[in-house]
Length: 138
Length: 138
DNA sequence: AACAAATTTTAGAACAGTTCTAAAGAAGGG
DNA sequence: CCCTTCTTTAGAACTGTTCTAAAATTTGTT
Ligand SMILES: [Mn+2]
Ligand SMILES: [Mn+2]
Ligand SMILES: [Zn+2]
Ligand SMILES: [Zn+2]
Image (cartoon, rainbow over all chains, first blue to last red):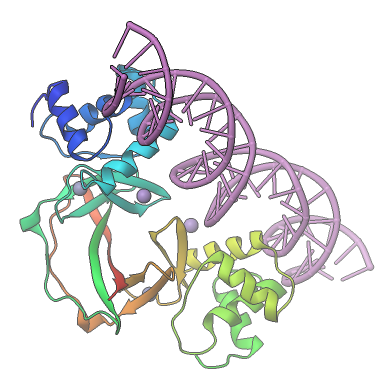
């Protein structure tokens, strides 16, 4: 996924049925260029785009993050502390929460295992399992 | 724990180094009478106490919930949806989240098992593990 | 290129949940 | 009782997020 061209990004947006506006292209580059999975908040992404790209309002950052989430390009994580994080890693996985730095860290898939899941109450099914391991300084 | 007398509750508050005020006694009864574990929010407990007991401000409900949590009588759970829940079950345990009703349900201890926990990043230790199993209608 | 229609962006207001402030009230010890 | 300390309270403030409706951009059509 390294260093996408604008055309790469534009195609991706079109595939998601989203017009490739200047703002969305800039945000998509920040989110998806490079191979690193990211855990960002609306505020943090807003600061980042202001520092490097075109002017984008905070409302647009929120709109875009939700649109990307609906398109399956991001995953929404409500870890704690009232902030919503968006994760560029859309695979099923779990997180460490560094509460002091308000940061999420992926837990490598092979390092955790839910032995046996409980049965859902009658009439309901399991939509998603989130494990959050809260860290503290040693 | 069934139907505590005021004296029971007052002793409990004294043990937590909290003056047994009218408000705290009323809230403690609501939280700790009966054997049922409860998952409440500040708003829900506020409504409840207004309906049945002395006038208590929302600020006092928040203050009291945090004091009880600090005293180990409650456990704070930030499940999702921007609301903070307080759990009268202070033992380590996990939850179903019924997102539609914004409700937490205890998962019986024996019905879930974390097979092996990952190692915490250098310099940090695991403070707490929270598993939230989000439910959806079948 | 010019135009019209549809979508998007934006500033700022509004909102929800929570915390803060500082003044008034209640509790406990002598 | 009196004094000191702690607690409660109303309302303001604050944080993160969503909403509103007007202006701007994008896209498709001539
Ligand atoms: Mn969302
Ligand atoms: Mn707290
Ligand atoms: Zn992640
Ligand atoms: Zn519980």
